Length: 199
Image (cartoon, rainbow, N blue to C red; front, side, top):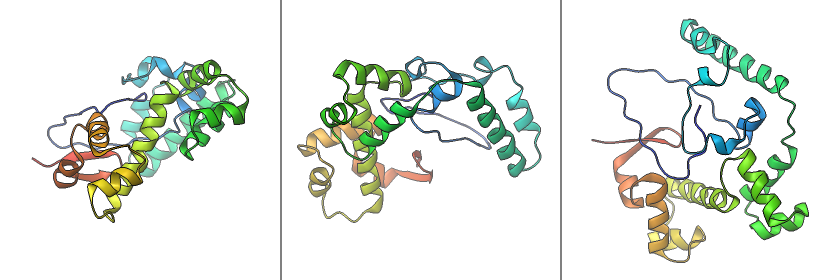
């Protein structure tokens, strides 16, 4: 189980492998496991440490991808039913930030203090609202970069809401480990947000 990361991480795999995974909403960890998301921040935790069901064994022993998906789906639904937490506020805040609202605008719309917003986002997303906003802005920028419809890096910088190109490149390196140019030239994204770097 991977928590929210606030900088890039690198996973190395050698030899043949298969991967199956689930993308979750930013607020899902708290809703699924009843544990504050900031306890998952910047780390991955074996699923066996969180649940006492043989979910991984069932997935490995399933014969088809469809069976694996059913097993994982049933597990997630059961986890949701077992938790009594209410993530409505956190989901709403997350959506507001994803739609480009500033932290001040979110506070005003929700009628909450800066401290309450901070606590809510850390509890359900696993990081501060400011860092989460940076990641959302970067993700939007990465989608623009994938489209390759920009004329220059400067144009992309300003279109993404960064003050200058050096700030944009620094932020890009924080979240990908490479510059935008290197990223375009040296990566293949067979799975969204999991680029494979060419050798």
